[in-house]
Length: 265
Image 1 (cartoon, rainbow, N blue to C red):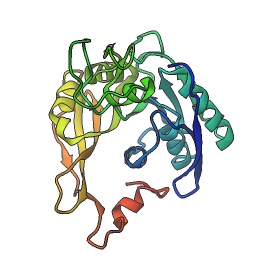
Image 2: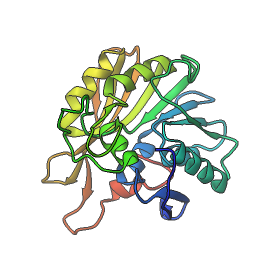
Image 3: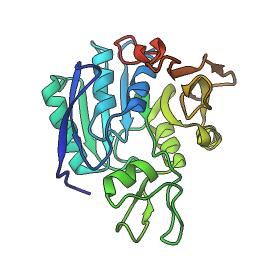
């Protein structure tokens, strides 16, 4: 889990950002871009944290979107990915506003409580594996970094599914601990787990306030959602018009392409 042996050097955001990424591990994809585009700022000097930063894509994208007083700390469990994130930060020239920390988001001593205005997270999509006898929801990868990104599990691979590394409740608990009062959580997640996600957030005083459903095509069911939750927020949820990825002409829609621009969604 500590080393990243094979990497690629990729252009992201149509060349506005270049990233070193693991060949065998979590890589920036459309959901990464959508999450960075979904974030909105409200504080005058916003201080953000990203949970599960991987090679640093979301943190760096946000620093590009929001120049000036915006700062962000990316938390990542795997040392090899943290080293890649730090390399990406240095090459992007964003050392003064982006930092990365190797540690477990469940550790209450990792960062000061109630010290962030906003939090971004792209949680593991599959339900985490809780015991060696439990069958994973998704196909468990023999590569630990990839399985942590998918199922939030770690341990000997592939025969033992290992212990839980990160659950939705872990994320909600960490977010509630780290965010200031009325601080905001921004997340992208899989639509078939929307109920579980909202349940975990509400259980930790994180009220859903803004929701966007993402559809591969207009006639297709949603497969992803973007959500904004407010710590200590009251009732009242705004559901935005759906985001369609691909048009009838087989090309990306203008709404999707807007996510790749500096203005975001």
